[in-house]
Length: 383
Image (tube, rainbow, N blue to C red; front, side, top):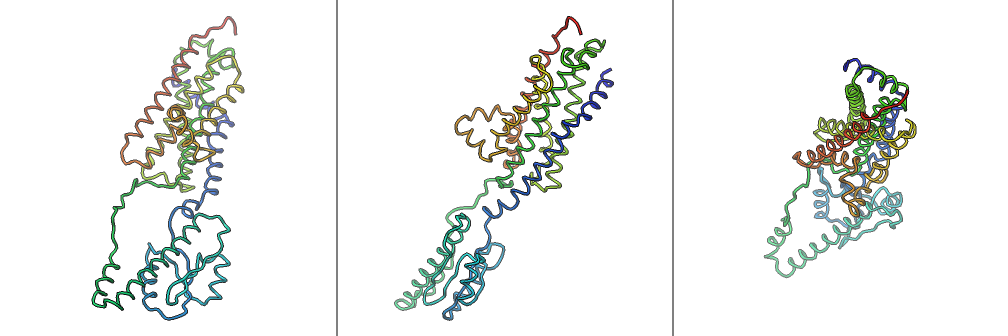
């Protein structure tokens, strides 16, 4: 009897077109919009790239050319250098093809375009050019002064300037992807998981004789009510898990969202979050006598509000909430789900990830217990 109920509950769930729209089509469309909107933002604002500059030589300076050749080569090049005349350089600067002009004379000088764009990246490039010119001029003055007054010390001075002093060790905080735009995709997965609450509603609605025709038939059926509810719960969780797998696979393999090297754990986190979403819908559906439409509005609104405070609409919202009410992020299902994906990306061990999974399982148990308690004791005078 359990398998019989499971089969038809599963067919009933996959035939609900509105649910498939919210759980499959909507996240695919929203994820595509996110990818188009955020493509290249991290690379253009955070990742360093060589600064394009033009060099105008008013005199011959072979040493300067050798220095520029060294710092303009390789993957970690500081400058992308182009030697040209002043007229061409000014035109390139006006057209924003370069960030600045370096003039080579007895001393280096520079020119940059007016800062009318307000771009922080462009401001950083100007600072880099300014720092290089000042440092070169300072070192050139030291070398010239040493050559005039203490020529015997010149080799030692040049040797000291050629050595790079490293006072700090570069220790990366994480081996994960530091792109902060990933939080939107984490919350998108959380949204799909929580919208599974609409599937959970069907468990309670279809088991209450005063809310649906199917519920009335089940109440008259000799099938044990506990068996009926468990079969409905298993079918809903199975459908929700399939929807999570489709959504994560689309993000990872079609949109090329970098979830890191622990993709199976991403599927696990999304699936456990989906269980929490289904159980929440089951609990809400068991409360009161409101119909499916009203309860669906409640669960959808709750899911979207949780996602809002987790950062689906405003990327730093979770940080704002954590600043004023850190406890809320610990009980917000969307924040817990997105945090579990964040932990997979940024931490090498599974300690924090396991804590988030346990939290979601506890939520699932609590919501399921509420749903069972309110549903199994309900009786009707007539149907």
